[in-house]
Amino acid sequence: MSTNTELQLRRIAAMPRGISVLCHFHAAQADNALITDTEGRQYIDFSAGIAVLNTGHRHPRVVAAIEQQLARFTHTAFQVVAYESAIALAERLNALAPIAGPAKTALFTTGVEAVENAVKIARHATGRSALIAFNGAFHGRTLLGLSLTGKVEPYKAGFGSMVPEVYHLPFPSEALGVSVDDALAALARLFKVDVDPQRVAAILIEPVQGEGGFYPAPPALLESLRALCDTHGILLIADEVQTGFGRTGRLFAMQHHSVHADLICMAKSLGGGMPLAGVVGRAAVMDSPAPGGLGSTYAANPLSVAAAHAVLDIIEDEKLCARAQTLGDRLQARLKRLQAADAGIVEVRGLGSMVAMELRKAGTHAPDVERVNAILRAALSRGLLLLNCGLYGNVVRFLYPLTIDDALFDRALDILDDVIQGS
Ligand SMILES: Cc1ncc(COP(=O)(O)O)c(C=O)c1O
Image (cartoon, rainbow, N blue to C red; front, side, top):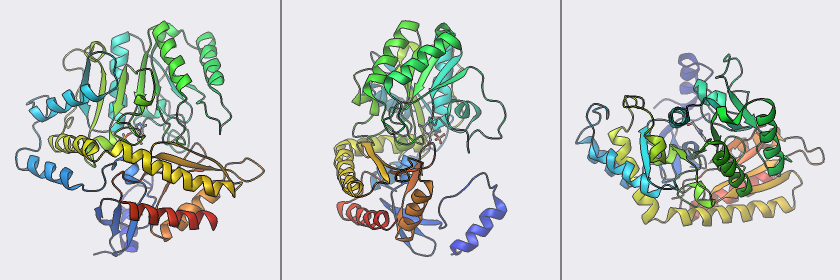
């Protein structure tokens, strides 16, 4: 097998630099929470393929479901020849998702496709075009996804004009010094200065901002947005692409809130490592686009759908929502102990197992990206794969598979302890 250095050189020669790669090693095998590289070294995976593997790498039940489907058919194009497994998955998601009243689900392939389609559905249902999203939001890398995303470097810079009529509001968080009142005042100003609320089709929000820094949306914000949406006939879209499928301690993060979204975007851990996305929403809204208005060639891929059924079974049978809460609590307790003796750790926060630690330079309050990068590098050299996030990249985020066993989890926390204290 090729060495990591050989593969890195081949990648740089064959692939554009715009696709940047965090790790210097290359995967040869992955099992639950461990990745083995081409040189036989093992890494504890606290990235889970960016929140895709809540059920771990190659969960045996996911593998068996894919193998069974592989023996039947791999593709018909659902829009040409439909199949029961996708219909049954839509029925399951309609029953599970926190949507008020009857729900319908449309299946797609990637997270940004779910976002694009939720916006198309909202525009069609309201007959309006303007959209509101948040600073620091991440909604994907297509041109509409980028337009909704609230971070310029590296996502938007150099890619030309964005989709018109997309507005951004400050996202409330204590660490950023933005209150719910500040965000709502900015919305009132937006309606006064920039856009007639009667032109707004939808407000998009991540119930916990992902790429933006793992900031949970305050319940008061969602309650106020819901009320404003109802007043002005605007649809509320929850982007649960990163928060979904048990990560926050509930199947959907919106289940932590007393109000419902009209549409929910989902992807990532739904497919357990297979590409699958969807939009679930109020049936009357979902039915607005005419036949042929929605769909795509690979939407509801049969192998991905088979994997998703197994994922939903595993989350229920292995009680992964409760496990997310238990592991998240243990991690937060450990990080808070470190924080007590470390002025650079300004906040440890999270919902369930969507946990983050924000670092600033002690005394100056400036984002400490250098220390975050040093922690990521040191952890990797000790065999622990971590990711960062945040508008300034100064947040360490933790996204281990919820199926990780206690011994490996504890080993990872010990490495974390060492590298944070040594940084
Ligand atoms: C909240 C959110 N929305 C949308 C996306 C885009 O998903 P994908 O990369 O599958 O297109 C992401 C990806 O990280 C995400 O975190």
